[in-house]
Image 1 (cartoon, rainbow, N blue to C red):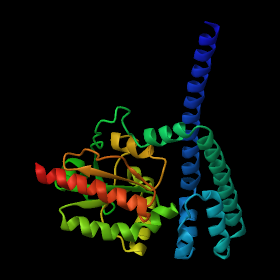
Image 2 (image 1 turned 90 degrees about the horizontal axis):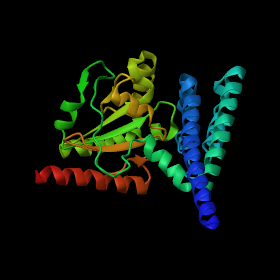
Image 3 (image 1 turned 60 degrees about the horizontal axis):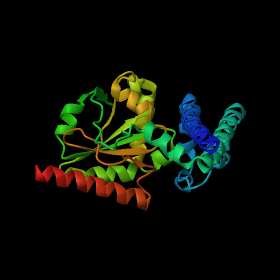
Length: 282
């Protein structure tokens, strides 16, 4: 009996430890996003000044080290105060990344659970509906999710933000993908997390980045306190891409990371094909 009680106590402690790890993982991801969003215009200047080859992060590398490397390559573009601020923030990101790595090594299931819950995946594996919204595109035109999704055989939704290097690096490939989808009755849209609530400065910055990358596909925003807005603010991994069918249902799991990677690209193609096949059978 004593052994059984001890086993139950240890199991409970393990469960508590994992739950704490999930919460800590979420909080660390949010802290990292907040650091990059607080001085978005300055970070945008970093990435715009960097060579294209520098704006591709290597998988498995600490993102803070990656940021410091880019800052060093563009340091002549900044004042001493700006450079000091950027370096300090990049060092904070590096520290957060080290903590995330340690947590993931100790609690791998907790890390995945945090990412899944952050991206709104149902625990029972059921099909989730993308939150309905009424918003605008970056030129101020009205956009309704009901009309958007029902009008497309498949809609690919890409979450990004302006100072996210992997996000910006894939914009030209997303533009090409949008062209391919159009031929199949589909569409790709972008949702820049900085532009929620119609922040005009963020909208202007996003439009400048999109224009520089030659991305003409529709980007939209809506109120942050709406259900769709809450969905966006719970996405802590960027870029993240969803596939949505004509009924507004999310198809499969989200694609985490730039779709320029072979694994992500293949997974995205499979989800798109699945949505298109289901649409044809109706």
